[in-house]
Length: 471
Image (tube, rainbow, N blue to C red; front, side, top):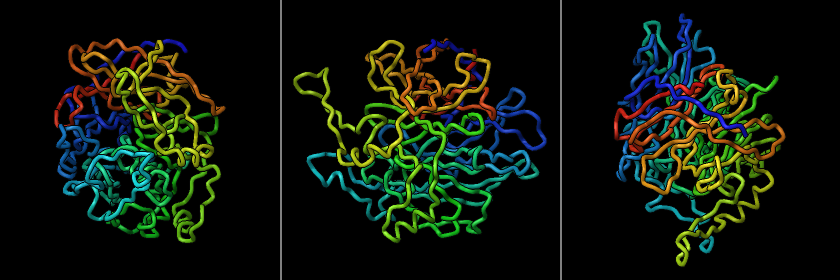
């Protein structure tokens, strides 16, 4: 693949962790504005070269900062503007709610052990007391005086652990006009309760929400399963995909009269994967609930399954242990052999993958996928029509400052695995770390934006910069 070099042009600096980068046109305006949502609950936009406040919901966000040192995966996770925002002023938020902190679903870290079946068949019990926090999805409107105001709550979701809540988790589908919510598997590691493959569990799914339907339910119940939702809310939901571990959003790329959907899957210990698909057959939640009541399997022909927890990208999910006699070597054991077999044929193969350890030239050892975006601009011709992705930080043996990575892959429509290539950048970050925490684009996908943070702690403030990726 062609080597591509780009520049990073700073747009705004000294902001908090940028979790979402989106553009929209204000009613009555003619310019597309870049909106920046931060994990702690601020939303800014760039107007006339200045950073302007749009909304501050920090008082609505759960207290962030894991006791283990400030790392957290909760907070303001999703921002999406309605396709008709210019006319109806509607936008949508996904965040972790203040005052909902719980003890977590398990008293100690989870480790699957193929020699101990109990560890492979855990169940999430006492859900109303054994959970970590509650996430909410809300609809807001910009009032005539320019002030945003909440209109209604669409979903209230109880989450088992603090991590794997998704990021850039709200996006509108240009195919269906529906709001797409990407939910992680609930967290911990190795999906302890196999929520991602259970059709009734909301965790580990990609869900379409028909926001045009009014359920007349302003404060939905807090739930973990689809069958706990009132029927009017069930009727607004369809499930696009399951087998999700954790996702940095979904990207749509026009391909003749269809759209290629790109989904990044954050890996466990082995590999990060980018999936793509054209056609899919979503299942209405009402059908899933009816099938569950009848104890039958719903028709899943054409339904997308990413394979987790049995599969990590193209590989059966593995437990990695060090070799006592040879510290430089590792032993890899299949964690969920039966589940890998069960989903081996029905799962979707990735478009491309990259590993946590890879010594090949023009490759890198990754940490975690943080963004996947289609690029349709002509400014960087070698990237036109490709899918660009970002990784949090390149794995290095030395203790030098961390550096994120940009890479790209070409589009394939034959379902075969494709290669990828690193995108070289020129920016000098000096001695500070530079974690690539988010990748964004504008409405017609002709521009790319990169969110960078110099710390892994959400409790370290004002260490963020947003760049535009330019030729």
